[in-house]
Image (cartoon, rainbow, N blue to C red; front, side):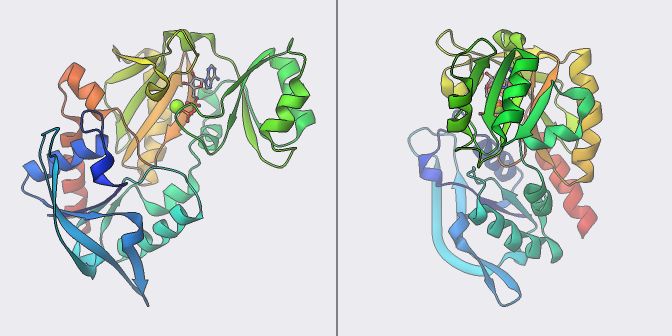
Length: 316
Ligand SMILES: Nc1ncnc2c1ncn2[C@@H]1O[C@H](COP(=O)(O)OP(=O)(O)O)[C@@H](O)[C@H]1O
Ligand SMILES: [Mg+2]
C-alpha cells in the first residue's frame, strides 16, 4: 500500500501529541510506504492531479523522528490512500486543495476525509443538522438577533465559526452592561456570522472528545477539564485531560451523528460534547489519538488503518 499524507511541516510537530504522527507509525508498521506532501506540493497538470512528494520514514525518537528522501514528482493517482491532515485555517487555499484531491479521488485514490465533505462541513455550523443533540444555538451576524438570544438564554457563549483551540470565545451574561459593544466587535460591526450558544455549566467537568472511525465511536472519551484560569476545554489553553467511558447520552449522540459521517465519507472525526450537548464536529484534522491511546492502550491509529485497508480494497 502506498499512503500519501498532506500535513503541516513534520519538523515542527510534537510527536508526543501528534495524531498524524500516530497514523504514520501505524501505517509504516504494516509495511506501507509513506509519501509526504505539504499543501503547496499539490498541483493540476491540465486534468491530471500531481504532486511533489518525498518518501518518509518515521521513528518514535524525540530527537530524530523523521527521515525524508529526495523530492520526486508523480501523479497522485499512483497512491492508494491519502490522509488530508492539514490544520485549519479553513480558507480558500484549503478549498483549492480539496478540489485537487477530488480529482485524485475520481481516479480511485481513497481520500480521508472525503474532500467534498471537508468543504460541506463547517466544524461549528454542522451541529445544526442534529437538533436532538445540541444546546439552544443561534448563528447570525445580526447584532439585534444575537442580543435578543442573550436576553432569552441569560448566559451565553459567542464563538467564531472559523476558529479553533479556544480562540475568540466570549462568555456573555444578560447582566453584562456592554453587550452590544462586544457583539459589534465580534461580528466586525455586523459583517461576520458568529455562533451563540447557551452556556453549559458542565464544562467544569470537561469538554469531551469522542473519536469516530467510519461512523463508529471509540468507546472512551477524553475529557478536557478547563484550568482554573479560564473556562476553556482546549488542551492548548491549559486544560488537563482525563479518560472517561461514554455515557448513555454520548452513545445516543454518536448513534445519530455517526451514520451521517459514514455516509459522507468522513472516516476520521472528533466530536466534542459538553454535558449533554454536541458542540463541535471536527473533520479537518482531529486529534487526541495519542492521549487516549496512552490511557487505554487501544491503538486507535491501527483501527483507522484497518478501515482504510478495507476501503481501498473495496475501491480496487
Ligand atoms: N455552549 C458552551 N457552553 C460552555 N462552554 C462552551 C460552550 N461552547 C464553547 N465553550 C467553551 O469554549 C471552548 C472552545 O469551544 P469550541 O466550540 O470547542 O471551539 P474550539 O475548540 O474550536 O475553539 C470549549 O472547550 C468550552 O470551554
Ligand atoms: Mg473544541
